[in-house]
Length: 354
View 1 (cartoon, helix red, strand yellow):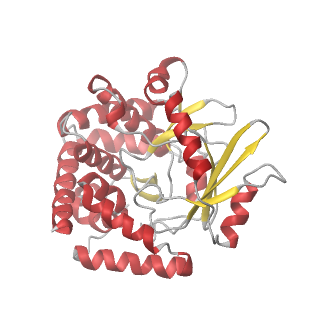
View 2: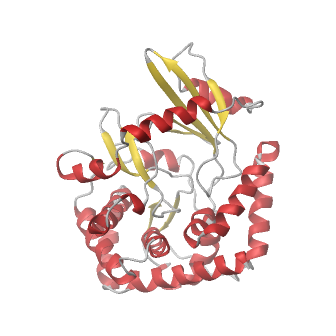
View 3: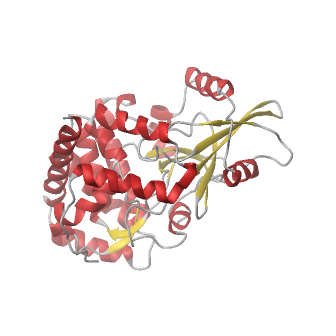
């Protein structure tokens, strides 16, 4: 896939343009106070700035990574970063780990997901360095490309369960927060209906506004909480916008990727044209490097790359095409590209704060 690089707009112009587009897409549903919160988060740290500005990455990638734009195009996450991995339950009630957000899914050069992930790691933690991170990612990615599979947290992957499954205190805090959330005064009818449909028939629930994530702030997002058959039950609905990769999104791509051949999908996850719903639980959370010791960080980084390989390998002939392209690029391209993107992002963040 080849994408011609065009003149990159200035940061202020880019932000204004994206938010004007959001307002056009969402109309009265836009949550202005959450958009303000998004800007506050963007100022806090370069990693949060990266998470909140996927559209900026889509604008800049053709020029920042021009040498990668001729790579084979595959169904890609589009917004790969270190905070885009989490836990869920599959149809067999097994605990599974991996990418759990396909909001910006698009058909893109396969390299771009790895570059953005590696750049996000460089911004999130000082150690390991870019070269070590890239080496771990490329090794794990190549091995997983040859034998793609999901991360079911049994047997070989119990270390992920031990590291990230919610403990008793986290479980109690999770339910207490949902139970105490104030009922929303107004909920768009389409989102209320979608949220209600995730619950057992006839069950009534308190619906509350939810503030979460970074990139999705500004979109309406609601939770439903209730007591059902002896315990708490919760679900979420979030408005879905077209991918920020203009022209790269196929109809139904997010749903297709989430349930791909080499996934063990979240049984409750439901992507539709303008919204996404899922059940909520204490284990269905994002992960941070602060929760895992330095001795396991490279192992986690490798697992992230391997999960991307399982996503990329889903298309017909994708594994072979990627493997051929990966081999011809040699060992140094990922560290170089990720360092370039991380430094550019840090500079944009400094400019934004200034």
